[in-house]
Amino acid sequence: MGLFDSKKSHQAGQVDMSRLPRHIAIIMDGNGRWAKQRGLPRTAGHKVGAEVFRKIATYCKELGVEYLTVYAFSTENWKRPADEVSTIMGLLKQYMLEAIESMERDQIRLKFFGDMSAISPELQEMVERTNAISREIDGFQANICLNYGGRDELLRAARAFAADCVAGERSADALTEAEFGEYLFSAGIPDPELIIRPSGEVRLSNFLLWQCAYSEFYFCDTLWPDFNERTLDEAIIDYQKRDRRFGGVKK
Ligand code: FPP
Image (cartoon, rainbow, N blue to C red; front, side, top):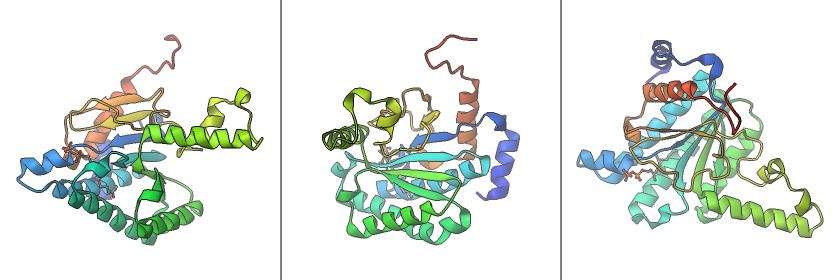
């Protein structure tokens, strides 16, 4: 779907453009079921899923959302069949190749959250390149969680913080939430106001465990390959009806 269709989509809906979430996070779920329903291999669902990611990232940027974080591959996903793992890695490689060519022109920053030491040296090198390009760019940022786990992220942060304490650079007694946040993959990025999980599953699956403290959740039955700009509009409209109190009382 091109720019024209996307614009039409949010004009037709009731998204309040003055109250957009700055950061939306999505668990891209349901690719396997989508493929199975069509008698296709699971990998076919991931291929369409990667296209949907491109479409939704473009739409978020057009709307004025500042950050989109997606769960592409968890620390547990290595348990999947080898051909499925290699298809997902291949899709990420393809996307990074395209991004390296286009992100400067499109002003899209790309960041990877997760333990990159387990991915192939070729992908690691591409991650480095997209990071370097991103440092030169301002504007919309897509974060792709790759070999990511929320607990793993917290453990890494705790280890790094402890090491800094031992080195005398930090003090455990003085630790604040903001300071701890600097040790996370999401350092410098606001927490997601809205977390979306399509496909009918109602759980967090080790996604952004620290960052979700005050997020609004949106669950829908649409499978990720069927997710589109309208589905995102519906999620944002639903979010905009919520009364976010952050533990306080209604004014
Ligand atoms: C979950 O659906 C999806 C994944 C584990 C992989 C998601 C990866 C992509 C969409 C490709 C990433 C590429 C880019 C460019 C971001 P599932 O397979 O668990 O679905 P199921 O629950 O129906 O089996």
